[in-house]
Image (cartoon, rainbow, N blue to C red; front, side):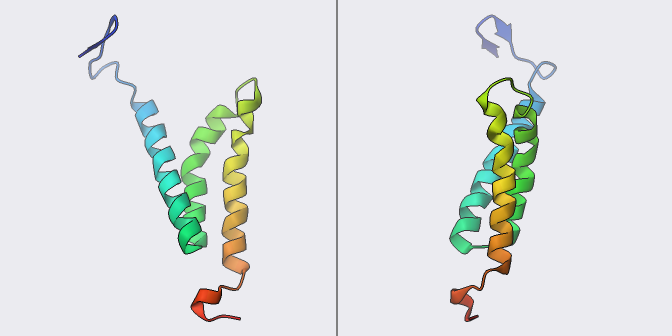
Length: 92
């Protein structure tokens, strides 16, 4: 397959990029489900799957380095969902 002047083969395919973006999409899915279900485990899974991309972007020289705050906020939300009483489960 040829993209521009570069011929894409199995040797020069960007496997790390594919892996990182797969983790980001898994994180977005678990973030949405975690917020809807108010599940601390899904929020923690979301934070763990987005952490490699956030850590990579932390090396930037501009405002994008603030992406490291995304997993931190997700972990805080996970603790909020764990320790807050859930009205839908009948707890007071």
